[in-house]
Amino acid sequence: MEFKEKLKSLRDIEDYTQKDMAKLLEIDPTNYQRYEYGKVSPNYKIVKKLCSAFPEYSQWLMTDDDNYMPQSDPFIKEKEKIENTKVG
Image 1: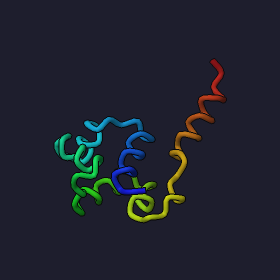
Image 2: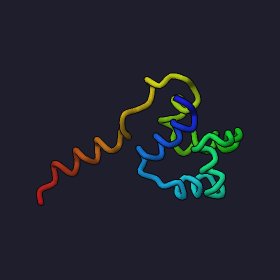
Image 3: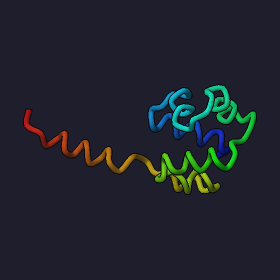
Image 4: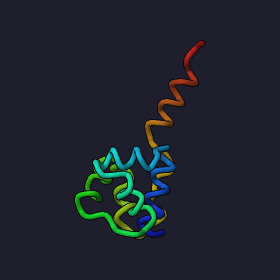
């Protein structure tokens, strides 16, 4: 999977828009779109921000190992467990 595809997958998993990602990375939305469409590659500073914002995905983003990607946020399962035990 190419880096541009990983960016889109990460954005979809986290339910972010391209504008959300651009804001998170402190860049113009058009620049983010260029990364996701593969027109340009992000520089080190941008990749570092991505890895800091999503540490659970950093190894997956930085390697060719497509099998490493976490399937879900570990806190989601915990939140669901708490929600299911609430008496309503």
